[in-house]
Length: 55
Length: 401
Image (cartoon, rainbow over all chains, first blue to last red; front, top):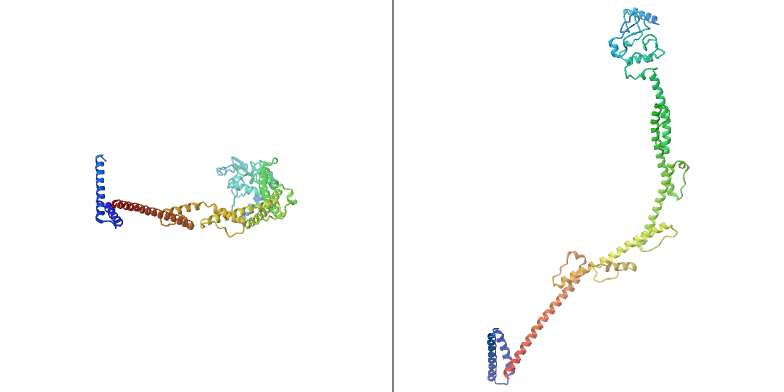
C-alpha cells in the first residue's frame, strides 16, 4: 500500500473517529473495512480492464 | 748743342780720369747703324737707322754721347718714361726717337711700339689725346646721367639709362651716372614716402577729414603714401571704437541688460548689438548647460534660485533636454528588477542619485513580484490541502453511514 493511501486512511480514520463517537466502534470498523474492500475490488477491476484494452 | 755736350763730357773725363759711354753701339760714318739682335728682341728698332741726324763719325773711344738711341733702353716702358720725362712730342723730338733719325716727324710714337702696347701712356700721342677726351666725355656724361637718374628715380619713372647723342664714352658715363642717380633718387623717395605715410597716419588718428600738405601734393607717390597712411589710421580708429562698443554690448549682454548707447553712428550700434547677442548666446548656453547637468543629480526638476525668468527658462530647457538620464534610469531600474545586488556602473558615477533611486524602484518591484509568487504558491497548496481534507471527510462520512 502506498504512502499516499496510508496517509489518506489515517486522516479518514481520524474523521471517522470524530463523526462516530456515538456509534458502535465494531460496527463502524466493519463498515469501513467493507467500503475499503469494495474500493479495492473496483480498483483491481479497473486495472484488469485497462490491461485487457491494452492501455 | 752736340758740341757743348761733347766739351762738357771731355771736361768731365779729364777731371775724373774715367770713361763713360751712354751708347751701346757705335754709329758709322753716316751717323747710323744696324739694329742689333738684342734691340730687335726688345722691340726697340728694326734694320738700319740713324742717330743725331746722322753723318757724324763715332770713334767709340773718348767721345761721350748723351743723345739717346732706341737701343739704349732695356724695354719700351723705359723709352716711354724717357719720352714723357723729356716732354717730347710729334713736333718736339730733338733726339729723333720718333721716325728714322732723319729729323722728320712720324706719328709722335717713339721707337718701335710693341704690338698691343697701351699707347695712351705715351705723352702727346693721339691715343693719349683720345683717351683724355674720352675721360672728359665720360665724366660729363656721368654728371648728366646722374642728374637725370636722380630725377627719374625720385619721380618713380621707368628706368632709362640710354643717351641717344654724344660720344660712346659719354654714353657709358651717362649710363653709370644714371644708374647711380636712379638708385639714390629711389632711396630718397622711399624714405620720403615712409615719412608721408607716418604723417598721414598721424593726421588720421586726429580727424576724419583729410588735409593734404603741399609738400606731398606735387608728387603722386608721396600723395598716395600720405592718403594711404591717413586711411589706415582712420580705419584703425573706427575699428578700435567698434571693438569698444562691441565690448560694451557684450558686458550688457552678460548682465542681460540691453542699453544701446544713444547718438551713435549706425555702424557702432550694430557693433553693440553684435556684442550683446554674442553674450546672450553664451549666457543661454551657460544656463542650459547648468540645467542639463542638474538633471544628473536631481530626481525631479527644482526651480533654481534665480529671479530672471529668462534664465530660469533656459535652465529648465537644459534640464528637460537631458535625454541621457533616461538611459541611466532604465539601466538602474533594469538592474533592480533583476534582483541583482546594487552596483553603480563607472559611467554613471556622476548621477548615482538617479541610478540608485531607479535601482531601488526596480528592486522593490522585484521583491513585490517575488512575494506575490510565493503567496500564490502557498495559497494554491493550501487550497489543494483543503480539497484533499474535504475529500477525506466526505469519504469518512460515506463509510460510516
